[in-house]
Length: 65
Picture 1 (cartoon, rainbow, N blue to C red):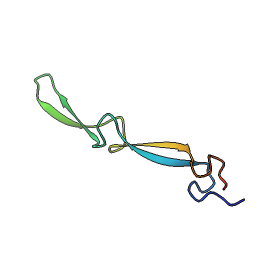
Picture 2 (picture 1 turned 135 degrees about the horizontal axis):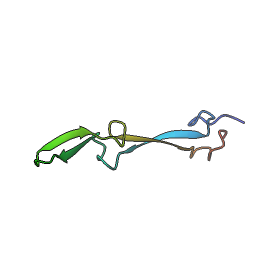
Picture 3 (picture 1 turned 135 degrees about the vertical axis):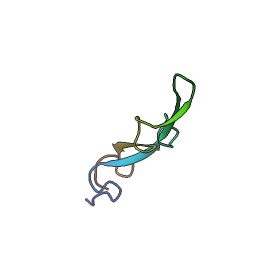
Picture 4 (picture 1 turned 180 degrees about the horizontal axis):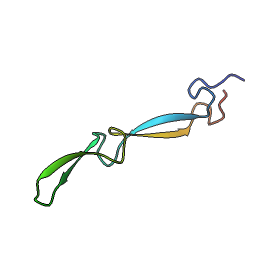
């Protein structure tokens, strides 16, 4: 059986999503105690993106076609 070309036989693919906390910007605006705004890096994601390994849709997670 031929190996799946999308997952290369690993049965999983890495999907990328925009971070829901920072809307994909990688930065969050917060206010300090004096009410001044400060931009900080989002600690929930990787530069605005979340990477999630999921079963391959092409081979339904079998690794072969």
